[in-house]
Each structure stands twice: as structure tokens, then as C-alpha cells.
Image (cartoon, rainbow, N blue to C red):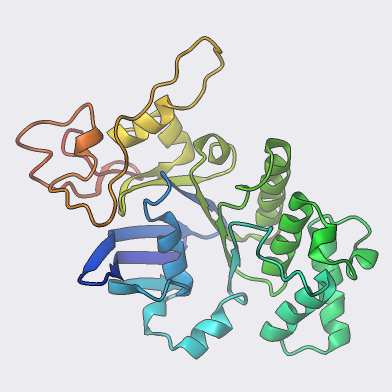
Length: 319
């Protein structure tokens, strides 16, 4: 299957007051067309920075040290900012993390959606409003015609997230980056939003990069899964293969920490905490927390992401 996006040896750093600190290490990541790709891991592991590198919406003190980001055959790191502005929202759209703060409280939903359409498309106001109504119907906003004049505070969290998704779809993108799209929502609404993303993906053949820390959620929706730890991708596999046969100790520990069907079952926790980017750890970054770490090996030698069997990559010296 054809790749729509290829991230090659991506290294990203943050400038500190006295020195720079590396946050992403040789990230390699391919997205096949028309699939949902999940990038999972604990908070602060580099998931969002990987995604934001694709559309170059990084914090001011962050910079890409090296690597390539190939989208439809072109390296986006060679693009000027004016080219990136045309690309964002047009071919690559973002569903941001928090719907509560992603909409301007001073403007109606109709005006905000229309602005998004007209920013990326050469259309009249009438044509733009027709597109706005279409996308609101697509994301199942009830009574969409009347809701155009509503302000964000008049919608629930779930409805706001549907509007954010409508905004992402307004210019017919080919790739959608969904950054923790269900974080601020309750469990029932989470399922509705993810079902909507899945339905839209199937209907339009979109590719979705789903950023999440929720393995239970992505198990129901992702086609492929990559696990990130401390700026490194440590495992990549199809969803079925990953959940049936996890190979990296971190992946195994994450899955063991999920609640099962037996309420009496005691949850296992991962000892310690993820390292900060200022912390220097030699060898495998996970070895201080790993129950399988081998003295004289794991704290010295850094593992590489290696193909272990068909489409299953693992970065572990003890595999």
C-alpha cells in the first residue's frame, strides 16, 4: 500500500537558557494511505511534537535538528512558511487537543467555519456557506442551519469537538492529525467522536494520525500502532499483532496496566517515571524502569528499531 507520509530520522531539540535538549531521536514513521495510525505513549514522550513537526507548528524554542518529512513525495522541511500555510488545513488538517479552547468565543460557529473555508479556498461567501452546511451535516450537528448563529459557549463539549472536526474537513484534506481528540470528553462522548472519525475515514478514504495515551481506546479504532518512549519509537506493528503479541517491555508494561474484565484483578504499575529531556540516560532510555534490563548491556548500548517479523518493529536488546 502507498505511503502518504514518511518521517525519516527526525531529530528535534529545545533551546534552553544555557544549552539545547533533545526531545526526539531518529524518529522513523510511515503512514499508509486510508488507514488510522495511532501514536501512543505516556504524556511528555514526544507524540505531539512528532505530529506538530509535520505541520511545523512548534513552540518558539523548538527546532528540527535533522531529518526529513516526506508528504506526497516532497520534503516539507524544505517548504517556506508561505507554502506551509497553504498546506495546513488544505491537505493536512489538525483536530487539536482541547475543543473547549480551540474555538473563538467572540464569533459564531458559522463565521469561524466560513473563515476556515475562505482562507484555503477561492470561493464566494455563498459557496463557502454551502460548504459549511455540508460539513456540519457530515459531523451530525442537529439543526445545523440554525446552529450557524450559535456561539461556542452554547454547545456541549461533544458538540464543540464535532465542530472542530467539521473545521478540519472543510477543505477536503487528505491527512488528518487528531491530537488526543477525546481528552476532555466523558466516555460515552469519546466513543461517539471516535465512531465519527472512523466513519469519515471510511467514507472519504482519509488517512488519520491519531495521537493518544489511551491504549484501550485505540485498540478499537487503529489499524497500526507505534509506541513512543522518551522521544524514541520503541515498537511498531499492526493493531492486531500489537495487542496479541507485544514485544517491547514498555509495551507489555503498558498493556499490563490496563484494567481487565476481572474487578478483583490487581493492576500492575510501571515503576519510576519517564525521564525529562534534561535527564541524560545512557543506553536504552527505558532500562531504569525495565524488569528485563540486563546489567552491562542495556545501560550501555542503545537499541535500534529493527524488523523482527512481518511489519513488526521492536527496539530492544533483550528481544
